[in-house]
Length: 185
Image (cartoon, rainbow, N blue to C red; front, side):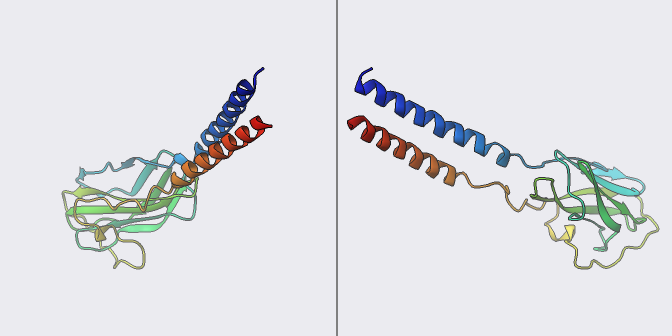
């Protein structure tokens, strides 16, 4: 085998190893929970208020780190108790609703991979109920978001891609330099 052939083989081996390291290391960091639906559905019109609100995601949710609020058109809270996570869903009980109008469901939940997911859903109560809400305490308020807009997710939660690119360039450059140096000997 010629000197050039050995050098090409070494460079190819380094490039394959670098590519495998990047491919295998980046996979799990890209998957995050996404909203899949809710009960009642986002934008639904209801004649009577629901007994609970359930929000479904594409991943399992962690228990104990979830907040769900139900804020009425009177800016009062109607959720009853803490949000409960079960598999891919988070549920909160709802008190009897009050005035007719738009009710915002604000959520901030934590998926099994540790990343928070937040947003706002809504439904409209078409006939006034007999319930009375309570003033909102320190919980995140869905009503703080502009009307008709979902609260933005706090970020992708994933690792930035630039360290992987820099690492790949350094690894490939180092491998080429080593191969060239060994090829001269």
